[in-house]
Image (spheres, rainbow, N blue to C red):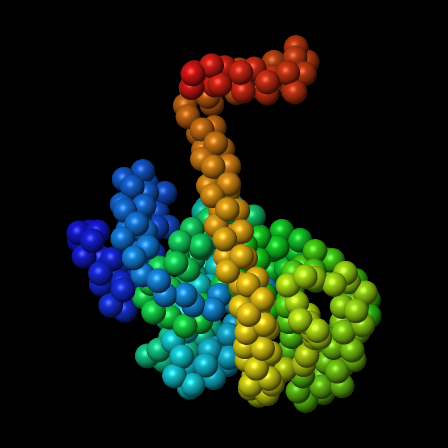
Amino acid sequence: MENIAELAKSVMNADRRALSQAITLIESSRDDHRIQAMELMDHLRSSDRKAIRVGLSGTPGVGKSTFIESFGTYLTGMGLRVAVLAVDPSSIRSGGSILGDKTRMERLAREPNAYIRPSPSQTHLGGVARRSREAVAICEAAGFDIIFIETVGVGQSETIVSEISDIFLLLIAPAGGDELQGVKRGIMEIADLILVNKADGDLKAAASRTCSDYSSSLMLLRKRVHDPKGFPLAMTISALEEDGLADVWDKIEQLLDWRKAEGWFDNNRTAQSRFWFKEEIRQGLLSMLDDEKVKEEMSALMNMVDNGEIYSSKAAQRIFKKNKAKRR
């Protein structure tokens, strides 16, 4: 790999090849690559560029990729630069991932002002790859105006994406009242905009009813301090027919302008940095379990637990005490 300082300079000059190299570097789990990645991030801190970070989730088959392609193309048509960090599901067994987002967003992939980067989720909570936040920072340094972070599926674990994004969009398919119960309260509480997609053709009436159901549900949620009047809100769109995209952008701008004026935008960025600092420490502590000696100790204690010779809690305490003594 080229000199890290030169790589950082190329990224800030919007070199797409350098951008891909940089993200590949920060996604690597090799120890020498992690050292280089930290050096790279230090160099990129000199860039004070800030993009709008948009988190996106939704039930499988709701049309997330179609929406990103249509909305992304709409934004590039306005002269904005758009990056898409699409987190693909990794196989727990093989560690591989589908990485098929470029084929699903073929039109957007051809846009000169767009960049699509699929990343394996590495089985991390919520499907958000552990290094997604660093990838976002790299895309910001490269001068992108809007960064989408598309996550896998939908559920309470997806709330971790809110620690990366400024705006969170939840895509929903037209459905009946019973399906409404399937959406976890946690994901509803972090959504800024609920977009009922596929509001076209025979599904248009169902989409309107679903939107009305979600609007009613949002009124029952506790008022959030970081929202102006009228937010969060539900609205219908058709990603396929590209209908409602201008309204979505208008609402995003309206919400961001209010949050910046109230000081919440900067405060949220600071809170997110603190969250990821703690998360890095947590992940670092968990990585200690990969040490061979620790694995041997755990295996021996596991056999004792299996044989009923020791309680699991006491066995765990032995591991903690032994490794705590080693660090002193």
